[in-house]
Amino acid sequence: MADLIVKAAVKEELNDMNVASDFYDALDEEVEELLQDAARRADENDRKTVQPRDL
Image (cartoon, rainbow, N blue to C red; front, side):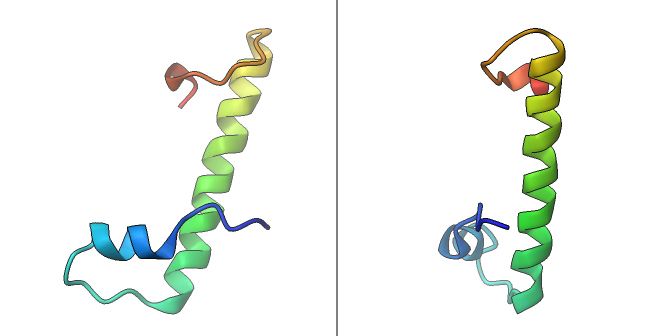
């Protein structure tokens, strides 16, 4: 699995919250699934370009 998220950006977005180390792996898996679903929808619509509506 590729690292799709930037830990520093997540930490910055969550402000003063602590982030468990395994949170990043779980978030990465969610993002990967979201991207795969979007790519599938684009493909089903005969497009090679993933668009916001595919989310």
